[in-house]
Length: 409
Image (spheres, rainbow, N blue to C red):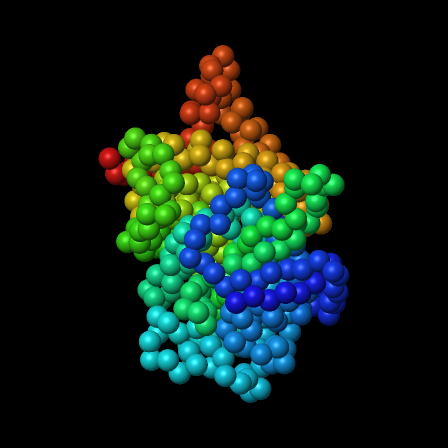
């Protein structure tokens, strides 16, 4: 299936424009779309409403006139569009057909979600190179959804596939004749998961503890899921590996107010674009850093409570616990570098920098605490690595209060 239309110049839900250049949409997901010339990841170009409606008609048969609204959502390197559908005006489409399906696995309509809203996701050029990895991540989503986890459920398209392949123009093209003018991207459609994201509320000790437990429950479920296309890691001796979400943060966790306790519960999880089979403690290290940056009052102590809460559900080994500080610190530096890199390549995407200063501040807090503890322990003359290793005590105090020294071998 093909659709030829003009290139886009804006993302506003009410603006459409075209030119002589063409964009080709093809519903084909049967092969790896790697390209040697595509050495750098690029965010997909913005799409107009007209093109999005054309894509949806190809993907699930929904007709343009029943699409009420299209709104772009924030994203680090992909493009996410919130689509609102008017069911009362629908003709034949995959939405209507699958809504009455007895086969829940193939159903595109989530029975507990009557919001009429869906998310169209277009992966960045790097993640679009490997269709098998993209499909494995979609299967992980469907697996968790089948277990009752509140998350997106990828929809089966009209051709029986989960993804659509499309060619979009490169946003910046040099005058050189050998430069490509289009790149291949992968798109898929999911139900929209209702809920408020965690970043919208002020964090506290109760939320930090619930986040730790929720992450452990999620990882516990994912230990029963496997896909060979996700195994792109180098094993580290004595460290467990498993499929993990790999990007748990306050923008990817959903909360719901518990009227009985007047507190928030963790209600769901979104954004499975980084799911991978890798070292298990990476999950906890990533979570720790992204939760610490949200806290202005003693983030180091609260990180300890996240660890203890996670451990209460999915116990850590001594080796994992001892390596956690180094891994968390590495994640903190990584996210600072990635933010700068993505901002350089997508200067119009303010989302990549919205916590940038906070991450630098957190690095300063941890570094200062590191120096203080090194001084207390008379390690001023020790090597840099020895200083870092000794500072597991930064996370240790709250953990010891809850669990003592009881760690798995």
